[in-house]
Length: 190
Image 1 (tube, helix red, strand yellow):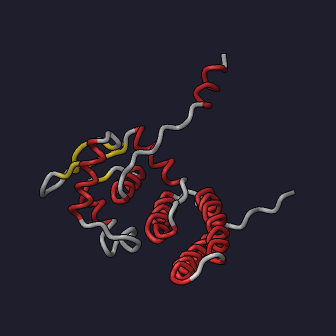
Image 2: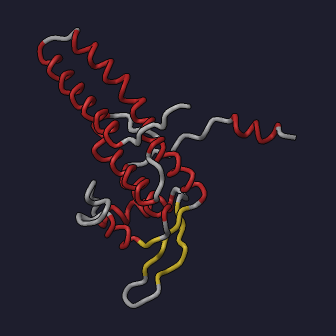
Image 3: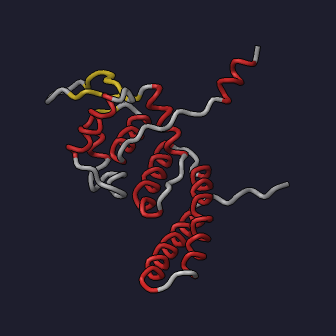
C-alpha cells in the first residue's frame, strides 16, 4: 500500500520556473499574505523593507503580477474595499507556494547575484519568520568549492587573467565570510 507514496517521493522535482528576480520577489511577498499591486510596490519602493535591498519600480511590479497571473502562480482573490480605484488583491496558488518555497531554499549560483538575490531571499525568510539556516548552509556548500577552484586557477594564471581571478576570489571569499557571519551557530553534536 505504501508503494504509491514512495513512488511519488522518488520522482524528481519539476524544474523551477525560469523567472526574473522581480517576479520571484513579488511571488514571495504574495505568498506571505494576499495583497494588491500598490501594496507590493510600497514594499519594494526605496523606503520599503525590500527596497532597502533592491528597488522595483511600480510599473515593474504590475508587469510581474501580470506574468505571475499568466503562469498561474497567483490568482485574483477579490478586491480591496474602500474609496478610490478598485484594487485587485492577489494570492498565490498551490503551484506558486511550492515554487517560492523551493526557490527560497536554493542557494544563489553566482557570487555577483548574492548582493541582490541572496539578500532578498533572506529578507523574505525574515519577514515570514522562517529559519534561514538551511539556505545559508546550502549557500556555503556552493561558495566553498568555488573559492578553492578560484585559488588554484589564480595560481596558474598570469597577466590580467590573474587580476580577474584575484577579484573573483576576493568577492567569493567576502561572500563566504558574510554567510559565515550571519549563519546561526551549529548546535554541538552529542
